[in-house]
Image (tube, rainbow, N blue to C red; front, side, top):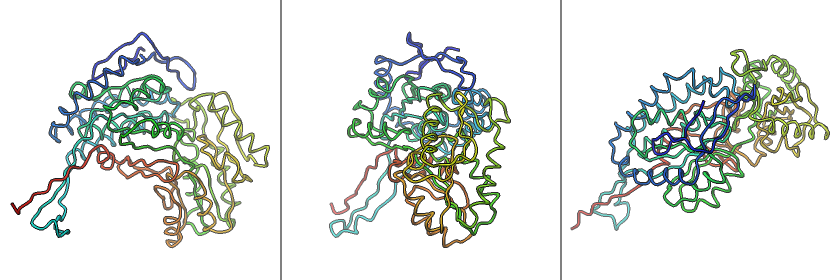
Length: 475
């Protein structure tokens, strides 16, 4: 199948193409047109010229655009789900779940489009402000560049595109090179929803050409990026005076107390968090610190549950773990884990690569200097370590240069609050895994994880600017 890029609402086929492969069978599934400098310039020019038109559209009509796009995506749910399963290697049950989350996420954005508002403020709190009245309103910031990752190619694009349209901002989507198809389908839905010409574009292509032109251009007012820390740092150094929101990954930890409600529940949730989407999730469970009193029991149960994971074709509804995004990534993971093994880590199950598939892996006897502990592994592998106390677990969970989310299991509310206050991350899940997330929640970050406020209302606010008005009743 031949996929176009979309430039200012128009489908365009270019001479230069990219082949997209099924990550499991390695079969070519689509040919995608690649944007060059001409197409990027046209998308930027049309977006910049459209910004006032879109900004002046009433809120209820912007909401209607989004709701129409939702209906289109609903009608293509099965098709887009299979597309994600093939281009990203995500098991179909999770791929369809991503489509459902996209639908829900865009619905939030449509609803919040009607609730963008300012507020009054007491000017007379200052002596100089007597007999004055002040308020502010929110206005669209301008052209938004959205750069999305491979692991949630539809929903994380929707996290950026939906709020941009809700706020009244033209948006240009740059999807991940390995997974451009679902992002194209997302933008197609907005075109079919009749957004004004120039409001949406999707440009497949290299970061060195497409990405660089977009982030450097002075017509762009806001960049929303999800991806690696390395690229995030590059954006901050080269983007200039633009508003930037980034989510740069993590190394998420779970702390398991000796006083918990149900050890079997904790194990099953942690297994899901470790292997969901092959561990290629920024809030995947990578480190688990278990109180020494229940460590052996937890470890045995965890290994048993891990061995139940069904490995295979993502299109099979029974599959739990499919291929990684590329064989190069699987080889990297193999190298990191072999390195840890050579330095004393023990592999209790898994620890093997079969082409692009890396088997679900449980590791213990690791130390904090190993890459599998201190860096972002982004793989179906988890390190489980004993601790002498809940407080030690909290301290070690926080011992990371990353900080998206964390999870703790305890029935002691004081310990839960201790974890909340002392793990410096954007969100602490109590009696659940860090991988838990609903799309309307604020999605914070700390330390090296960036600051991703991607809940619908928060994302929309980030795509607006405040303008104050002060009435002087003295003259």
